[in-house]
Length: 464
Image 1 (tube, helix red, strand yellow):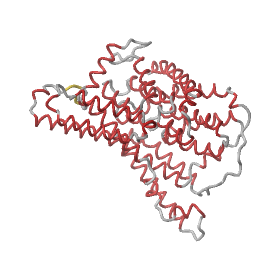
Image 2: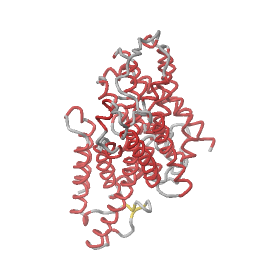
Image 3: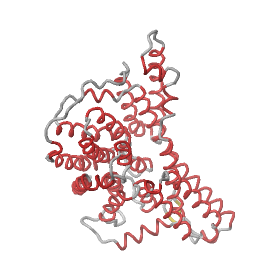
Image 4: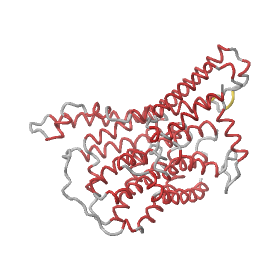
């Protein structure tokens, strides 16, 4: 039965990886393999030789001696435990996504476009890379990529040049998401799972992540494509700007940034703070919306579009629900493998057979090479299940350097392929970026940045 569950997982994983080839959204195989895996566990519960207790990070003593009823009860408790941990992540993401959509409802991100005055290609490159690095740490790398490429499309009219900018935005966004607990789904998973704390995460990874962004951007600055000046269309004012756009931008970003502070002060799970942040932003959104749309003068297209919508309801209708369900499916499918002790055994084998590279990570002797390979692997396959698997494989305590290196590798390694990160996939869709074009033009820059940042991490980890 274990073999059948592993086969289901591998087939589902391949379907997720090849979603662009088989034309099936990755949400579908994720949910199917989750349901089938747990169904097989339920049907074959008496045949399994062991059971992994996630709460205590160890195998259950005397599992084989339990009768069928007790085994089923244990399985239900484990399933509920994993559902609770997964739901914490999903509710957190729902809140963050909704706040970002509320900001967009008021055209808040247009404020960023107004800051860009230069026409020099290299300056624009550094501005977008810097914005991607900072914004992704606040509103997550996926959303930052969407926002910045949308702005890029209004500033850079030449698509051939724009693709290069988009490639560097992907690298910078993934680097920026790695050092913030709210910057990337995988980092958020480690933070909510009490593997990393905000202060140590920033301390360990801010400099490596910055180097991961700066090295490719610096090299790209000397490439011929970024020489000279852009032809900027100054007349691009196709969408009226709300008078509350700047206010909602700073209010929304401040609310999201306050969530880690709320967690430190109250010791409550992060999703509680995110719901508070959403509530505060929603209050202002409703107040500003009522005052705006009650005016005698109708505000052209913007009012026509939003006049009959509550900002919160409108924003909730625009969030990426398929992404939320995908995370549910993949995290619960990995939880099935963890519960059977498969990941636990794999971790032991990995530690015993992988040669050491450089300094050995503290704790249980996990090789640097293992984590670097995890980073490379995140470029080929989705980094969410890789990090989910690592949560079940390793049992190091809070703020052990292993978790921070995993956060860096999984967060930035995906930049090496266009399909290796959520930021890359969304950019691929928005700009129709060819897989092999990215592989030829951008991947080597991402690899150099990844390795340079990893080298800096080997230094920063000695400071703690």
